[in-house]
Each structure stands twice: as structure tokens, then as C-alpha cells.
Image (cartoon, rainbow, N blue to C red):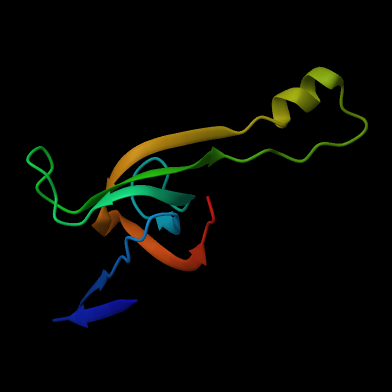
Length: 99
């Protein structure tokens, strides 16, 4: 999925809807996300290829029996993110989601 030109490596993003991607830049770097909608040609506001993605910003932490209920609930929370990313900042995986 990568090609090199003049020593520079760029990721080629297959922007199929419900495709699983990795976010490469920003606050959610190295997080997995799912493409909901993509615009490969860009729009008037965003003249570059971009995609609306949704993913998990913070995953649940490990919970043990010795923890109290309040701590278990706090550690069991999932924090999602919904964001529009430039296609250059996403890397596709081989996985697809059935929605």
C-alpha cells in the first residue's frame, strides 16, 4: 500500500466506506478508526481528499475484583472521536466493517 518516489514514502489510501484505518497524525495518532464517508476529490471548503472517521480515543483499562465500583466504572469508560481527516494522514488496513 505504499510507494516511493525520490526517497519519499506516501501511503495510498483506499477510501472504501467502513474501511478500518490507522490515524497517523494529531491527537489520535496510532488509533484505529472507521471511515464513514470519504471525498477523494475534495470540496470547495477542503480542496484535498478527506474522510469523516469515527474511532476510539481512549480504550477501557484493566479492571480487577479488588477495585471499588466507582473505580471500575471510571476505568470501563470508552472515549470516542469523530473527525474529518486528510487522506494523507490515514493508513488503510486490510480489514472492513459490516454496518
